[in-house]
Length: 296
Image (cartoon, rainbow, N blue to C red; front, side):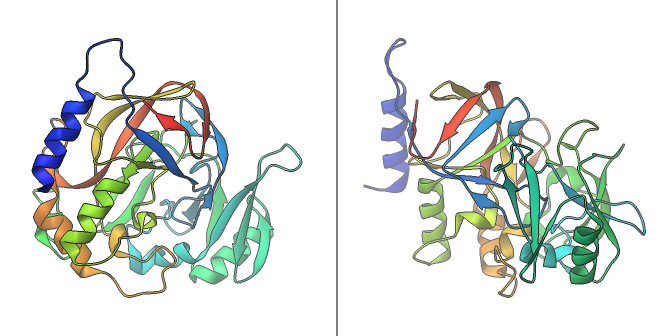
């Protein structure tokens, strides 16, 4: 069955009469990134608060030279953050975040962790769980003009700039926009076919949830996962990060970025058109999230 025809059939299945249970799929991966732009952790279960997965993007590196937040959106400055691992240690109930650099493990917030990450990155940084006022980050736009969003029409491909982190508000977490980021196995499989590969690693897109479903749910769609209720808000605009290997061990994947630029440009609310993959969701009702749960 052609892809378009199969997607129409899938949509028809979802458009059942009110009151019936609509099964969308199941949760096949739960991922959390305690330190922004560092490698995250795969989870069996986690509590989801109104702000997202508990502990997700709770910490970030701050550049001591200009106060900007460290982000792999500027690979030359911050790409090596992808080689750092962060996980939440819940054994003592404090939720301490452990940072591992070059085989050494330190607690986030300690002078030892700051020193280890600074040495690894080659720039002086401080790890913080406090979102600064008007948090800003360095970014470099991909070289393909199709990866430049319409709301950045005054910029050009490859340009470097400093922009605000729109989702990072004082008292919150270091998120780019939505509380929860979700991708689906169906969309990943379609992307792999477009790129001409057997698969594309979901970790390139740094999602919180990988949902086994034929395609991404539409904005406005509510997803019920046990007690947890999410509402899809917008498709996720993509930057240079999907072109980086999840552990920063391979060259920039220009082919993948090119496919996103040519085949995945879509409207992002009333902001304009951008190359997108995956969706952002807000939390309507907090609750536990577990691997393998059914999604309705």
